[in-house]
Length: 497
Image (cartoon, rainbow, N blue to C red; front, top):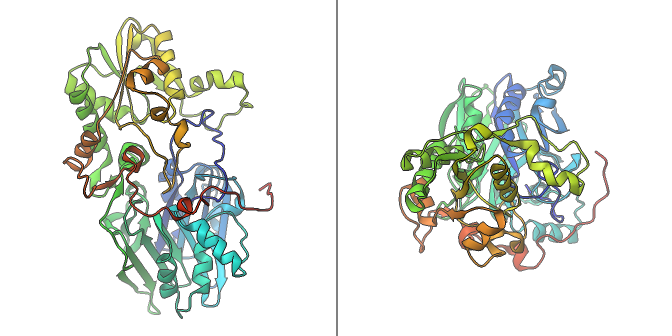
């Protein structure tokens, strides 16, 4: 979910050197503990967004909403908060804004009272024509209260000429372009939709016979729900409570579905390793990345060390294939959260040490093979390599389990401008290695990554995954960017909440 503003700050990442996925969604219909289960599901999806979380429920008479800045566990473990969310249906959202301000009014789900009744909507991803549509709506008299492109969906639903909410919902999303998974609830329905290309993931599950939708399978696991299937690309699934209490489930196609191209970064970085995305174990895919990386770029070393936590499965694979011992040479502090000190230049100098510390006993006097999942700007890699050297390493060889990142993303991943990406700042890999202070630096090939995830090389005529950050091959139109509107400011009242 993006906001129509300039890129925002990263309070927990002083150098902006980490890719961020902006949100996760969860919804359930017909269960008496709907809000509690939604809170648990969002807790499992916390890695997809740590800035804010929101839940909307319906109790048969009215809708209820709770939105809070901060982590899910900071608010939704409180029985008093959950008591404010009665009803047997709910949807929830955990948020990381890809761009723009952090304000409570932008926290999803967003709710609107329409002619056909109330509806709440939440989505994961980004609309590449959202700003274009927003300007058209405002020109036609619409009043926007947030800077979220989710609000555009509500306006499109409100303006649709169809008579029921399902048809209005489908009419609205047919006008949206980009990569997204979306949930909506009405007085009787839970509606799920996935973008025509299937860039963002969405799964369907079941608990006690009640339908559930979530961004990842780990959210089903935490509540003991059964995985049913992936929501297909371009599919809309409508679950509705009938007067007798039964639930009907109807699946429709949006009519503009394309060949599915799941986002490769779900496997490289974003999804939890215990999730299954697109029928593939994320953990197994990441370990395969390390195996292929070792085959493509072997190097003599004494120990394989992961950059935690993202690099751990790949480092295990590298160690397994190379026969070089795996050790935890870096220990991560899991309790840092947001930086609690004003980010002055002095604090930036040791900011990495707030999160990571070298395990000298495993590093001193050794040739270290440092395995990471990705490199964005390289500033964090520079500090980690220096930390390893300060702990006494004889050599530091960096191996990266994803190809070089050359291009920005417009489907919900918060990436720096193209000229700030490490791969675009230096002429070759040797120059990049010199910048980060490594004895050598190598990246997995695009085919090596494809084989790790899907078992076969990339088909350049019809790529199996969304991989534009490596290749520049964007799977959809970028209407806002092509119209030179992507990233321009939208006027909005300042907020303290």
